[in-house]
Length: 112
Image: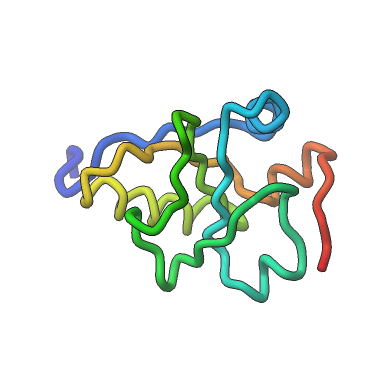
């Protein structure tokens, strides 16, 4: 209670914000779902780094861009952000609602 055990706050962005960031090249999207989920559908340009083996040091170099984590609904990307905070990584942003929110906003996914 009262924030005990909580890591620093996660920055959440919505699907439209992510779409704009991807369009202007200011973000690198990292999908933390498992490889079979990623293969079934993913947001164009996303890099797969499954939560089961996720380590902040293995995230691709963003070259000054914002790294945004994403999963199916937001829980796993939040867990990955907790790992980032524990590792004192600067990664602190995820897609609120995950790919589900992306699709609910009418945005496209790639399949296969």
